[in-house]
Length: 87
Image 1 (spheres, rainbow, N blue to C red):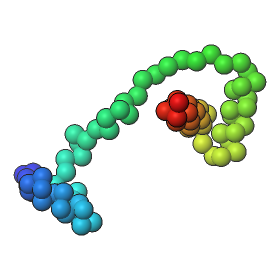
Image 2 (cartoon, rainbow, N blue to C red):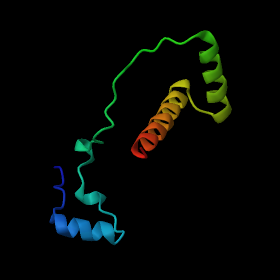
Image 3 (cartoon, rainbow, N blue to C red):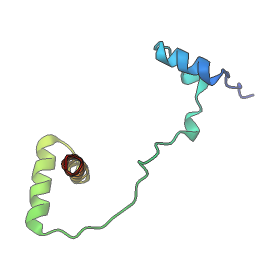
Image 4 (cartoon, rainbow, N blue to C red):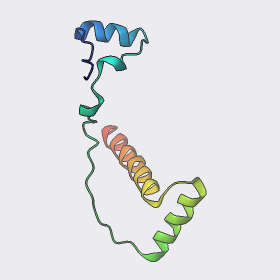
């Protein structure tokens, strides 16, 4: 028999969270999502020298090529957004 999750009001959940209490007993993690972080696959053709440089930097910091590309793209997008909001 599966134990039913405890239930509380949203106000009580907020209060407990704000007080630093563990609220995991009240959450259904199987339905959790991260809006705006859904992933889509894209293909990008790059010259060999660029792939070699990416691999070298990824190895230096201990991450995958994909991770370094995502981090660098995110940094550049944020910088461009900040620059455009200053105009």
